[in-house]
Length: 160
Image 1 (cartoon, rainbow, N blue to C red):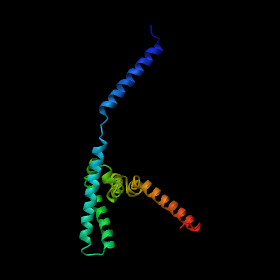
Image 2 (image 1 turned 180 degrees about the vertical axis):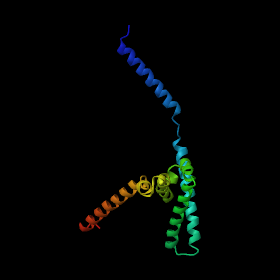
Image 3 (image 1 turned 90 degrees about the vertical axis):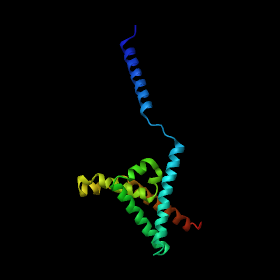
């Protein structure tokens, strides 16, 4: 005859097995190759659109000015697509291909602003706008500062 503790352990083990089976059944299966291909296609399309916009602007401006206007235009397009809820669908399909370019950064700033707008200008938009992009900005600035410091020390040491 089994003790009460043994029966409890068996029930816990059965529950855990059922839970693991459930998790295995509902967890989506991903293909790394398929995800990489979709990211490549999405990023390629975004970059091709950007190049087309830049070529258009180069009809009226020099290359540097055209590049600045292209960046602004891509950010504007990204924010508009985020506002009309199209960019999340692009991201769902294209993954990192839509998140890595500047359009993804614009989306990461616009999406929280839209989501938390109802909480007000200060506590909604003001506090939440950089929830996704903030760490990227913070670590980007910090690493830039750190690399600049290392470069400066190497110049003082006569390496460069």
